[in-house]
View 1 (cartoon, helix red, strand yellow):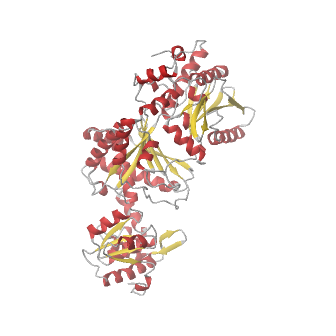
View 2 (spheres, helix red, strand yellow):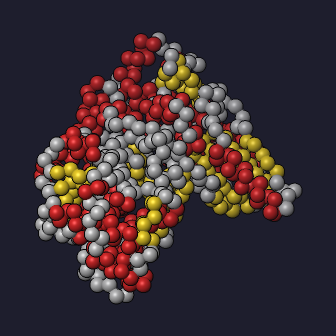
View 3 (tube, rainbow, N blue to C red):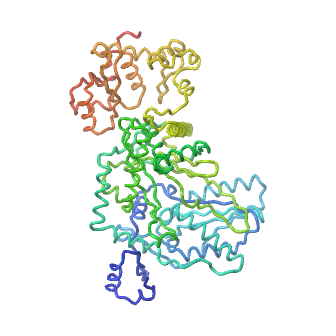
Length: 628
């Protein structure tokens, strides 16, 4: 590799010629000028200009330190890190509306120190919690920096807490592993009186950013773009998961974490299943997550985001910077494939996606050009992350260290399932948007995931649409009031079980939706009226009725009415593209399509043939029907 000294003597023409000679990452001339950002950095910069929640892109770590901490050695180690990695002294500025990165000169790291040692235990803990929240939430200034900051909180002479926070625009999960490893090595060397033990870095992040932009051009860019355009063509813009609250007009990024744990027995069973399928644990877990998302949303075309480290070149393995890319894995659950077949499908699609991981997600979005909305992320709204690299937990020689879970108040996506294999089994967290979901709801979803995994491990020949989401007792308790559970026939049709519940507990609440509450008797009466009307339209055994309505109590009325009339129930998503709805109706040929105000215009425009009946607007036709 050509030295920096030799590069500095070259003319610009000689420099460009040298760069074209090699596909390896070369050093960019600095000369104190601004340099291009990477594609990923460009997207985060634009999001920051649009007012996106800053703390949604903070990467924070905390560690409790017990023992004799050498403050001077810690300060020196942090100074060396900032000197070593240009990304840690990089800021961003706009030139004619285009972001560029500017690399600052090495300077001492501004480690804020808070001495709480004079407070009693209660006061100390209260202040510690407040400082942790303040640190994780305080905004970064991308133009002026710094984009790495830290606090050292002194609890006692031998008890400290170190907090470090970086903006995602200069870091990622792998980078936290690099930072932790190098900080430990530097600190250990310093307390022993030794020199900096780390080898010099051959390239820096700015060199990678230039290389990436030059590499992703011409035929290579066309090939990668064509793959993602074809792969995601016609994919649903939104995964319509059932939420506890309506989706806001603009995503606000508020979030929380929920722990997930698979026991050692299930972990071993999943390993055996993965080995049998010729895949990995990651592929099996992703397949199960897709099953849960499909079952919850009622959609069989599911796109899940999944991160990759994007560190395929040896030159960048030891750098701190924003390298991680996100792949869009599109999974087809149409016609209920077996668990075995689904794992095979996921395996093939993951491998293909990884072959085309070079195109940054930011470019994929531009290529695919999906329907855009401020209320949800483009292409996918759910993620699955398998953590198989360094944890990024901070450790220091001669000190007992304990990883701290810092306050977590953001969620970039609706749901993100992050898992890792530990000595106890497979564990992790679900990060969820609190604007949409309650903790209890996400806890149920985590339970569904574990039950699906158990079902897959027990019998991979089962169709995934029949894998249990709950155990048998939970299913029965959920479906029927407790007073009649013991007497119910498990094989009874849904409508029969519901009618028995209505007879046994007529005044019990069956539905609570916003400001609407319906008892079992009221819901049963409404469904009976609509069922009588459907029979008058010729609905009976083997007669199909489509229901295209937004989630509401009326959907339950319609479903029960169809079943009570003896017909078959075909659910349609009013958010589906018009062409898909037309194709489904042409293939299924239902006798009647039940709609509400949200779907009426769409169905009128489709004009697919079946009679369209607005349950609300046309209520005069059925509200006087018998209630029994």
